[in-house]
Image: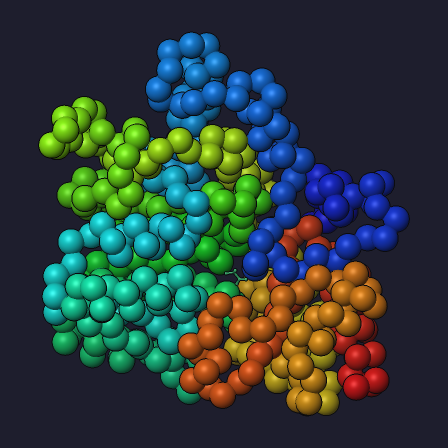
Length: 403
Ligand code: ALA
């Protein structure tokens, strides 16, 4: 992969702009954005900074057209059958909250999630337990960290309304066998939602081929603007759901007593939207498709191998997740005996401009259950080079030597 050619597109990586290059290994939190995305957003603010779907003047008509194009782009990106199945949200968190609050869950319904879920796929369900009397069940991974298919089948046999799993874990990078999961769940009449926030940046997703009922992603992890995201849902399901947030542009008309809601997707997109963000997100999807997911996966594996092999003899290093880097996508999460993870992250930053994330990565429940205080997560993408992965290893060794 010609990583250096891509780096030119990312302002903080472009060597022409920076004498002290940043080594950005925090893509699992937020990816960087190429200039094409930034320029698409700037065009909105400079050339047609108006509303979509409301006013009739020329600026508004341009925004309406570009928002429609972005929706079509995201529908193609996910393989949706129609663009109305794409709901723009602020992020994955909002998309999951939308389903949790708008789907007609009944007291006693069971929601099944995994034991490594991000807080965004845990807390909305905990709230439903309190507010609507649903039951929340947790499926634990097997001792080797792999998905417990027999345990899953057993849980389904007990009756489950919705299964909601992280497609790829933001903690250890492990991807679930989603095809099998969806088939088994549907056989037992359960709906499936996939949190694809970490999967969408590195694999081709086809919601129709998967037959998944709901799927969420965050724009900021796929080269898109902060504060953008998508909820995909099968049209029939979305159509039957009540809106979550209500207000302007969700209704066809209203009286003082009542209102008539617009169809999907408008009924789920209340108020003025982040038009620059939506247009930028469409551009991000276009850019990512041009890079290609096969190339991204191959490159992530190359870098993860360098980090895994380079640190395997480091005294007191504990890897979180499987030893084989091929099972961890672009994620390398670890802790070092005797050194606070935040201290490691600060030292990497100060010593070599290496940006990583430290702490519990919004998966507090897993860390608390396992009695682990925190960890350091280095996450790579196609814009990282082999030399950067080697520098990460080198600096980690230096830290181990001095502490
Ligand atoms: N989910 C994001 C992360 O893992 C915030 O860093």
